[in-house]
Image 1 (tube, rainbow, N blue to C red):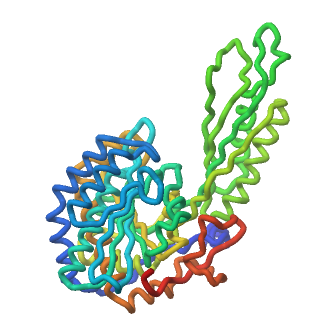
Image 2: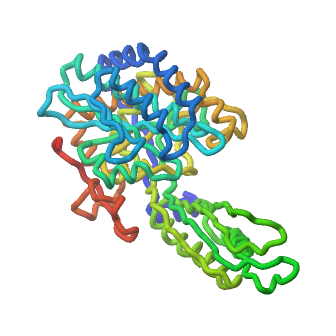
Length: 449
């Protein structure tokens, strides 16, 4: 092993997922799921394009909220709109054999990116969640399997920590496991189980004093200078941070003019690393850059620390079933796990309950990955829809097994997504509320709420 890899392992990086050959569980159930999803495919395609053509940024997903909840009601789900006080969150549930059985959670994301629409493919994630939940419902009824499927419409993944808020409000309390998926760049008809970077944000505001930039600049305290000093300091800091770490930000201002010393400037920064402990350590160094710039420019600084997005920790047992269904059952290519590059608030869910978040490849152009206009176009393609339907089938098969196979679920609980098992609270440590110097372990719920 290379020295750099040994260093990463010492950090407590989430274990990478390597697929062992498994026997496909209940091929008959997978066939039922295939038929259900294939029968829904045209409707889901239309639904996906509606959301794609009406992009809405975080916490403003009103069209998506209304469209998706109406669709789930039409398909026999009990729907709660504006779930837990969040205007664009929603819950759709179906129970077979009330009074007994586990609860499988599914997530549908909905939000787009400012200016470039669905450049992260959340229209595909939305319909994958819908298709997964409906296919699970079909299987529960056909095979008389007791249990509940809950589909959550989760707002504001793109910077708003929607799932973290829902965890705090109890939105995941009744779930025994949770599943979802995410499109990215990758080979045709491929899927992969990897991790993500932990992340936090910082909002920075500098306050100075205006002056005439030519007549009396010495009377001013330049808030834009403070922002530029901070930006340059962080740029130099990057030389001394590890290659797996990321710090990136932008500068904002209002009513600036070249002949006026700016008295206000704002910045928003993201800090990412393989684990949230590393994020906290790096954040301390970045904060010093902001504070030093304030002193050097004689400005005041206000710092607002954002939420933590924890790194994604896939449950290996859920993962084994998923890749067997995807590979053996659906002839998908199982990709190789690479280094994490992005972040998601679903990482918080993976600390709270056993969870699974496969990625999958959709066709796009060179340099046309997530968060580019080219990916927006790719997320509306027929090819992207087809592979999303395949992933939907494998997810639904995994979800049904959580509800039907007691021994499988016990193994899910006994095989931690993280090697750290020091606390009694287990998965259900309320990680969204924990200080960042406390570490949750892993465990499981054994009965429905």
